[in-house]
Structure formats: C-alpha cells, structure tokens
Length: 425
Image (cartoon, rainbow, N blue to C red; front, side, top):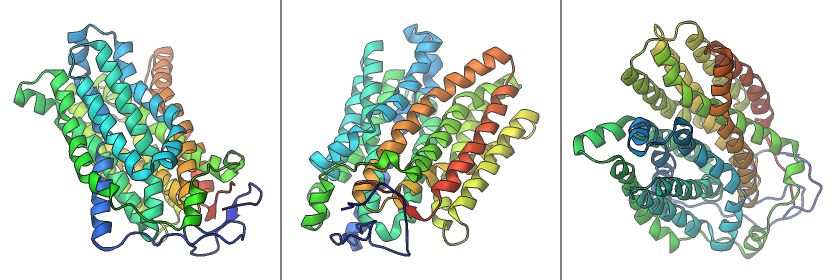
C-alpha cells in the first residue's frame, strides 16, 4: 500500500502487480490464473464484454420504427442513445465501491442480472418502461465497464495486452452484431420492436450462466493485499498521468460516439441509400474488431504505445478528411480507416488503464475516473456535433471539429503512453 506523496512514479522494468510505487514493501500480488481456470475465466470475460453494447446499439436500427409506433419525438428517441452514456459516466464512481463491498465476481454477475432485467422491462408496451429498461441496462454496463479492466489486471497480469485486446474486440464485435442483425432478425421472425430488443437479453442470460462458476473459484489473494483492496485510493485526481489517461479515454470516446451518431446521416445527405449507409457503419465496426485486437498485442513488440496512439489518430484523420472531400466515392476506404483507427484507440484507452496502475485497487479507481469523465464528455458529442451542423448548414464544419479534436487526443495519448504508474494512497 502506498504511503508516499501523490506523484507519478516511473516503472523500472517488470514488477509485480501489487508492488508499491514508492519503495515501501507491499504484500506479494497473485501471479494470476493459469490452466483450465484461465481458459474458463477468459471465456467468461469475453462473454461479459460481448454484452456491453448490443442492448444499446440495437436501438439505433429500430429508431424509426420506435418513433412511428410510440409517437416519440426525434429528441426523445436520441435520448435513448445519450442516457446510457450518461449512466456510464455518472455511475462509474460507484463501481469500485461495489467491487470492494461484494467482490468483483459477484458484482460482475450482478451487472448481467441488471442487463437481463432491463431487457425484460423493455418488453412492456410502454415508453416509460422503454426508458426505465434503458437506464437499468446502462447501470449494469457502467459497473462492468469499470470492473473488467481491474479483473484483467488482477487475474491476467502477464497477459494484460492479449486480454485487453480480446476484451475490446468483444466490445466492437457485440456492437457490430447488434447493428448488423437486429433488423434482419425482426423481419425474419416477424417480431415487434419490443420483442426484438428483448432478444438481446438471451446473450446476457448465457453470460450469467457461464459466469456463475466464478463465484466458487474466486482468485485468492494474500491477507495484506485484501486489506489494502478494501480501501479506496486517495490522491489519484492530483496525478497528471491519471488525467492524461482520462483525457485520452474521453476524447477517443467523444470522437467514436459523435461519428457513429452522424456518419450514416452524412452519407445519406451525400447521396448514399439509407440501407447502404447503415451497412457502412456496421462495416466500420467490423474493421474496428481487428484494430481493437491488434493494438494492445503489438504495443511493446513492434510499436511504442505513443506511436500507436498517433497512428490511430492519423487513420481517423484520413477517414474524416475523406468524408469531407469524397464521402460517396471513397466510402468503403474511409470506413476502413475509421474502423481501424477507432478500434485501436479504444483498445489503447483500456490498456492505459490496466498498465498505468500498479495494482488492482488502483486499476479500479483509475478506470472509474477515466470512464466517469470520458463518457460524460462522450455523451455531449452527438448533440454538439448536431448543433454545429444546424448552425453551419453543412457537414464540413462538424468534420473539421472532429479533425481538430484529434490533436489533443494524440497529446493525451502520448502522455498516457509513458511507462509510469499513477500514484495515490
């Protein structure tokens, strides 16, 4: 447990996940899980991650149907997308407390139960139930968002890059799956939009069942480490490195969600058919799977993390610039560049949370801080971009805003990539 001042401490080569950052002896950290336990736990993490986007992304392809059937305004419908992001940000500080109070395994099981309950609520033919279910789902995802990086830090310290890649790949995979098959499933099965949204609860039920054995196979930690884990980290908000990690998380999230909200509209306004515009967004998410998996795997082997953060931003810049100059003619190229760049960025943001923290306790707190500010910032992105478009009457200015925001994103990523640990007590 750290007793020094809240300064950022350089890493001096490999160190145990639970080592002290100021030279004070600390209880030895667990070496992580191995063998069959690692395989089952890894499968559980992937299934949990697969559930963190579909129940929310599935609303977008059905937005027109929901509006026509419920009589909601466009603003009210867009709130269905903004509410979960606000939940991600506002509830992120609660997650470490839940993890300390009930343990990571039980808390993560609870997140899947909340997603199941939220999808069940949305079966009801009521606008109130639709919004209530969305908030419940957002709450479950908010807690899982924060706790999963800490679980990776604790149980896979030697495979943090690989597991972060699989985790972020699953996030993109779940989003792409929901964007691509929600409408075809509804049409093939002749379901109502309520039943179609509720179908995604089946994936949460599967994750819940697969995760249940983890309650009996919890990772054992030394008594000293357990006592330290019971106390929150203090002084983290005075750490410049923690703010750089937070800034990178926020700016890449804003870029991703703002672009995802408006790219199909940009393409339609440029002359692309509605069906093709939706498919192009799904295609970009599919490419994001590759970017999100490869980025943390190659960090430290072929490219430095700072270089990769800059490269991801360059790919995004080329995609936004292409959308500005030739949105229809080069649509597939621009979506490819954006998918790879955004996939790499989210993966790096998660990897920074894991690698810039010296132990599980700091990881949970850093994850909470980064995602609290990051997702609140991201929630403003679609609305601000829409307002800029309304004021300018063109998509050129919003695209220019997205391009400019890549500059501080690179600066934050370069700082967060330094091989140091955040400090706190």
